[in-house]
Image (cartoon, rainbow, N blue to C red; front, side, top):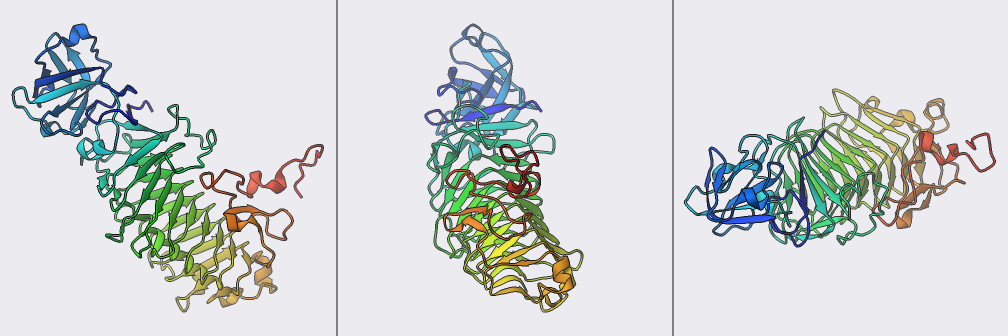
Length: 475
C-alpha cells in the first residue's frame, strides 16, 4: 500500500499542511479567498507558479481569524500566478465547509509539519476518509492537560488511518527491535500526556503504534484511552493511567468490534476497577498488563495470548458473558491476590479454553464461581505455582495425579518458574521443573530493556542450539 504521509513534530505549526518535515510552511499566502466547491484559493499576493508550488505538494487552507489548527488540507491539483487549486474530493483531509468563503478571510500554507494533537480535533474531525493517511509522530512530549482529543475520523478497510511514532528516522521503531524503548519521557517514543483529559478513538479502522500515552482521567469509567471505533489496532504502545481511583482504567474498549492490542504495556493502579476493560470482541497478543483491581476484564469474545498479567488487586483475568467465548494461552499471571483467572459466566454458545499458562501467587488459580457447567471450561498443559487452590469449581480436574490431570498435563509446582518476577522479568528459569510450553515472555520491551522472549515453540530456549552441540540442545 502506498501511504499518504504526514508529520507531527516539536516546534512546527498546526496551521501547516502536515506534508513535509519542515517546521515552517514552504510558502504562506495570507488574506486570500477560498471557494469550497472547486477548491480554488486565490492569493492576495505572491505568485505560486514562480514561487515553485507544484502538483506534488499539499496545502492547508483555514479561516485566518482565531485559527489554532488548520481545518482543511488537500493535494495541489493546479497552480498559476494567482491561484492554488486543491483536491476537495479524494486526496484531502478535513471538511471544506469549515473554511470561510469570505473575501480575504483565509490563509493557505504549502507543506510544513504539524506540532500537536490540535489537528486531531481541527482537521481529523468526524468524516469517512477518502484516502489512507499515515501520520508520523516524532519522539517528543505532546501535552494536552485537561483537553480531550477525539480521533473521530474513520478509515475504511482499504483506506485506514495510521498514527505512527518514530524516534529519529521515519519508521525506525516499526520492527520493535531497532531501538530500546526504555523511557516514557518522549525521548524514545512520542509521549502524549493528559491530566484530566482523555484520548478517545470513535473512528473505525485506525492504527496506533509506537506511542506512549499517560493520563489521570477519572471523570468517567471510560479510561484514559477510550476506544469505541471498530477495527482499531494498538501496537507496541504504552498506556498508563496514574490516578488512584476506581475509574482510573488505562484502556476501555466497547461499542464496536473488533479491538486488537499487540505488544503493548498497559498499566493502572490497583485502585482502578480494571487496567484493561474490554466488553467487545478482540485480541490481546504479547501484552504486559499491570495493576487494576482486575488486570483484564473480557465480556466479549477474546483471544489473550502470549501476555503477562501482574500486580493486580483481586483477579488477573475475568471472563464472562453468555454469548462470548475465550482462549487464554501461553500467558504468565502473577500477584498475591484472590484469582489468577476468574470465570464469572460460562458461555452458552462456546467454550473457555485455558492452556499453556502459568498462574502463580494467588489464592485460586482458576476460579469458576458460576456454580456449575464446568464442561464449558477446557484446560490443558497449565502450571500452577504457589496457589492455595489451583482449581475452584472445576471438580473433575481437581486431582493433579489422577488420569485426567495427567492427561491434561497439569502441573502443580511451588518452585518459582520465573527469573525475577519482582522486577517484572517473567523469563522462564531454566532449572525449574515446569512445563516448557507454558508462560510468556520476559521483560516487556518498554519496561526496562528486552531481556526475555517467548519460551514457546521454535523460539523456546530449550530448543536453542548450544555452541558445539549438533543435537540442537533441545533438553
